[in-house]
Every structure is written in structure tokens, then in C-alpha cells.
Amino acid sequence: MKTNIKLTVLLLAIFTVVLIASGLFAGVNLRLLSVISLQTGINYNVTSPFYYLLYIIIAGLLIPTAIILLLVRYKKINIINIVLIILFLFVMYAFSDVFLLDLYVFPLHGNLNSSGSLLAVFSLLVYILPVIITVYYFKFAGKYGKDVLNVILFVSISAIISLYLSIITALILIAIISVYDYISVFITKHMLTLAKAFSGNSFGGISLMAKKAKRREIFLGGGDMAFPAILADEFFLHYNLLSGVFAIIGAVIGLSIILFLGKKGKAYPAMAAIGPMQFAFLGLYFLIRFI
Image: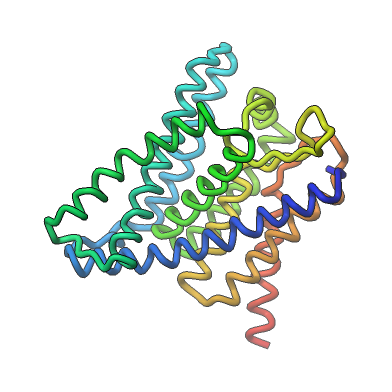
């Protein structure tokens, strides 16, 4: 969608930051999982990545979408708000859990097998912090406060999911999501229904507007940031840094195609462009590497 050039560049910058931050957060937490395994003997990598792939598609995408569409159909706005609060609280709990563990294990050199008061405080904060963040987000945060928390939300989701997938399952996921995004916008059009229902809500995406504009001029959904980040994270974590960089470049170019070539005011399936461009640039990386 052709729009204010400053807003377009700003959105691309935010998008790039999310992808890079997700890779960093995933890298730190991959190391965290190894520390947890050493300290507690718990192995977090025993489940098949294909199990998590199915879980993400069914429990993380299809079921919530179906529930929210049903609630939109019957105009149960209050129930929708409750569902959004629960979803946000759940993700903030996952974020708080790994973030506080990072602080306890690395800067503070804490041992998870200890029974000290510091570990007890951190364990309590894991349950308190998500509630505080959720109340702030839905009750007190302004637009910019919500945008910051949205970025944390997308970084957390993508980084945590990437810990339990593999390169193959991430490639399959992005292929499925790219096709699904195209179908949901241009064929079934249920994504447009969702976008319209949440047009006045900052939850689930980043919206930007010019100072004099009365409504948002540009919007990017959270999935359009989280899914490309997952693919880049997998290559960062399990192949090498440069392949992850190529995945990020492909994602940024894919989003740029939508932003600069799309018609103003028309909705486009961002993943339908982002996913193929990520595949193209990863293909380019391996072509260069093996020539």
C-alpha cells in the first residue's frame, strides 16, 4: 500500500529490529536450555519438532482464529476482549519465565537447584510480572506503550517457538503460512473480517499514522513479524549467522514489495510476499556458498 514514505521506512526498521532481536533472544535462550539441562537434568529437546509444528498450526493459529471469528460473527465483543487478555497474559508469562531465568542464570550466576531467597523472589516474579504487564497494556498504556509491548510480544513468540522447531519444520511452517495468508485475504477473506473487527485495537500488530492523520495509515500484523523471525532464527541457531542474515534480508525485501508497490487503502497478505522472498534469498545464499 503506497503511503507516507517516512512511515514505510519506520515500519521496515521496526520489522528488521524484531527479526534481529528475536535471533538474539533465541540464541540466549538456547544457551539457557543447555544450562537448565546441566543444572537440573531436564532435557527440553526430547519432543519431535513436527509435534510443535502441528501444535503451532492447530492450537496456535486455526483454533484461536476460529474462536475469534465465531465471536465476531455473533458480536460478542466483551468475550473477544477477554480472549485477547488471556492470550496476551499467556505469552507474557512465557516471556517473563525465560527473561527472568536469563537474568537469574547469566548476570547473577544463579543455580536453579538452589533454595535461596533470590530464586524464590524470581520464581514469584514469574507469576506477578505478566499480570502487571497485562494490566498496564490493556488499562494504562498509550499507543506507543502498546507498540513497545507488541514488539516484545512478537520477539518473545518467535524466539521461544524457534527453540523447539528445526530448519525443516520452520521451512514447512513458512510455506504453509504463506499460502494460508494468501487464501485468508483473497479467497476466504476471513483475515479482512478480523482486521476490521480490530481496526481500533492496537493488539496483534504495529500500526503507524502521520501526526495529522485521524486513523492509522499503515498496519502490519504480529504474525507477519513472528513467522519470518522464526525461519531466520532457525538458520541462526542451527546453521550459521550469514544464512540467517539472508533470511532477514529476504523478509525485508518481501515486505518492501508490499509496502511500496501495493495500492493505498488495500489489504495485502504480507506473508505471501515475505515467505517466498525468504526462500529465494536462502536459495541464493546456498547457491553462492556452493558455487
